[in-house]
Length: 68
Image 1 (cartoon, rainbow, N blue to C red):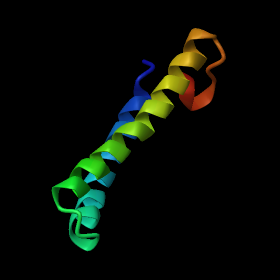
Image 2 (cartoon, one colour):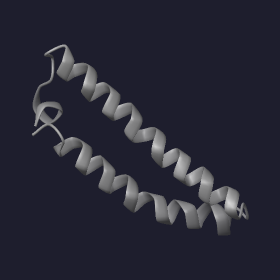
Image 3 (tube, rainbow, N blue to C red):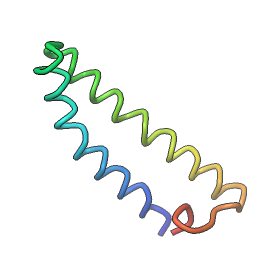
Image 4 (cartoon, rainbow, N blue to C red):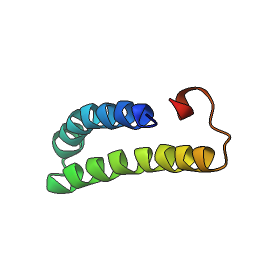
């Protein structure tokens, strides 16, 4: 029951990754490196939220969306 936040963030990052990849590769002329950069950026953001949620749950300080 604690994965609602992870599901939401995962879906948001998946939806952001595609336009960001196109922007980096075509508009900034980065090519394949732009796709890799966009994917890397989209992988770091959930890492921060998931680590924070883990810490809050383990220390029994999770409230609201962190504990759903």
